[in-house]
Image (cartoon, rainbow, N blue to C red; front, side):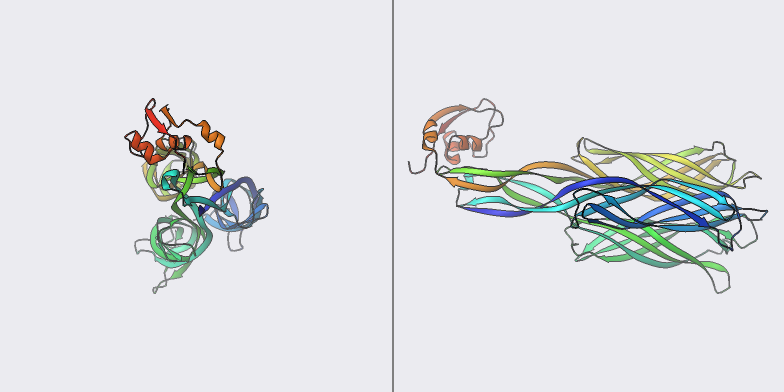
Length: 522
């Protein structure tokens, strides 16, 4: 008899690590900008460009971009100005057991950022970043699929599905485009701030590459050149397309791509009439790519032989079984009432950062909870604070359908704000609405025995003689015709025929069977 083997690869979880990174530095006001009186609003975002494993550690690189709106000293007609800075991230996280061939998932999330005016020409920032990392490796081994030469009725096979990461890649692509301001808006005197985010992402996979399409939502905040002190705000949507080379990508794999704006450069250009109405953009989009595949595998679960004794050697291993993937889009809203803030004359801009604080798996569902931290910039009905930034928290709670999910399983999520809208209800109330996209993956850690070796040897004749030649068996819960045939060294088809049953028949608790021992060449 010959053992037929199947090579199996599973993803083995090496471990996870958590740490905090402190970023601290100064922002100097350029000579062309006026002195600082106070900070109006400060925003920061982090992008990771590389994460790789080495012996005992995970190294990562990235950048934190900071944009500050401030009120200038002195009596100006339009006192709002902006300054920007970047902090380079180059650090590592210690993790026992990792090695250079491991897959790495790493995220950096701002836990807190403090800003302080040092003097009228300098700001100090201090940011605390939560760093989370998971490491995996591919483990390959040979499992026995079947025994050549042994009747199929004396073998018990089973099928199972394995989902594996086959490629992990961090890449980027650049989008260049331009925006022309409509004539009903004033031309640009000074660009204060530009927010850029990716929405409506679509992925198509071809041989060795992935095609990415979506929209860039570009929101410039600027001073008009009409002599008025009013700040202008608008939002533009720019479609984009891009391609990235990924060696293991093909039509039958699953591609998970997380896109984030890593950096952007916006410059003002004049049109043919000499008016500053053109925004030229160069946007760097970071792509965190994960390729995974699912395949069904048949392996030998158990066997017996009426001619020989089989000594089966099996090894227990854990692997991840994919339960469900689901992409979900939902809206959350809140009517925000101002507290300890001046009344609103006009809302200029609303930005938001979504934070998922809890993910809970229940039967056929995943419950996601968190908040959107919303920053609302508005013109105030106040002589002392003509411009004001108000921070509110909008709760997130969404139930995502995930068929097959059960409590105790593992759920991972990724999320992004797709759309932001607002409407002024009164001088101290604003209706904020956020549309979020959330991707949920539910997996289960399964423990399974894999047959790796089988040793054949002659029967112990004394043990075989101890088995009755014929007996009446009362089936117990969990018994099957195959398990009875193995226990009594009986032929499965003969056992089924004697009892007027099909070989695949289910046995009931208490069901009586006539069992005849079978010995080859007896």
